[in-house]
Image 1 (cartoon, one colour):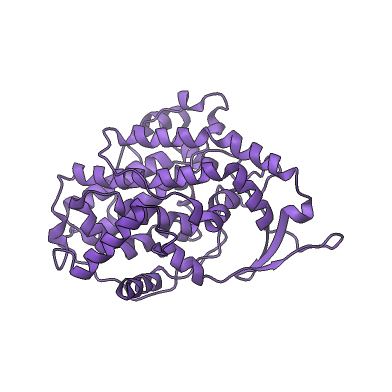
Image 2 (cartoon, one colour):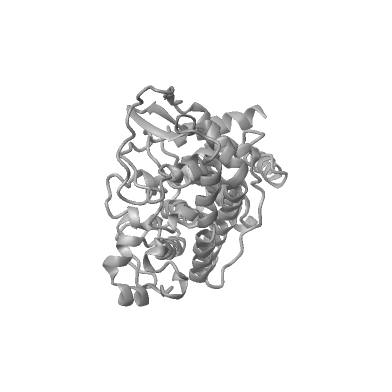
Length: 399
């Protein structure tokens, strides 16, 4: 057990500190989903992914970390279905990117989000990485595929009213996908189905988005129901964190909202991991099922690694990962800087909230995780042009 805790401690250092920005699922959610997805892989892939678990978990938040620097990144995380129609938009938006662009224009798709096509594009990049036996690229695109796939499971990533800003519920985005998981992760069931090869990945991700969209009404209505038991002074609080003063929902409100909506949040988080594992497995299958053992040095897990994997798999199957402190993201969150709350008393003026974000899940400029010693990875072969510079088309969609 001591060896296991030491290993987890080293992995925590690799994860780095949390960034001070609103994120899809929060860093905690994305990293939990990625770690659990590794347990849902077949043995032919699991050893390789477990060997690189800490790096996969850390890189799963990279798309959010670069949003402040890359203005093209934002639309990859969402799709505002109700922009196209509030009455069954899924019958009006073609699933194929080329058909959708021909109907609405590429600029419109970019403005209102491209997450389903981003998922397919990233999956294709992972297929190419498998074919090239490029370990670095496999880890990079596996982590990013996890991120975009998980984003599709969030109801507020399917609407123009992404933060409740149009319904007087500003702050709902962070409450639903960050504050609740961070407070109640120990209560959520993280055991789940194993990944499976997807016959139609595009249809699968569109099905996920449609499922998320179906939860929107309850997301808003249950917030309004919960709010009836609070005053403005008890519903919100002000916190000063990372040099910024922000208004957010109070912990008391979060606790009450969890009783109303928590089952939905837990359900979507739990469902994301097997879909991530399925996307990885499908990419590997499409690449010809390469032997990932040839990309590992040594080619098999060592005794200590096997013991760790066995312990974690057992905890996953019994839903004890969080309780046994085996989640890397949970370990990291315990070390994160706590917010200093500035609670507004009745009759007292509180600091004003920051400006509302201009784009879905928009983040204020956020620093990337602090530099840490890089994990060594073995690159078997690599394309002449270099992995990071490759541009691979999937279903006609380009980044």
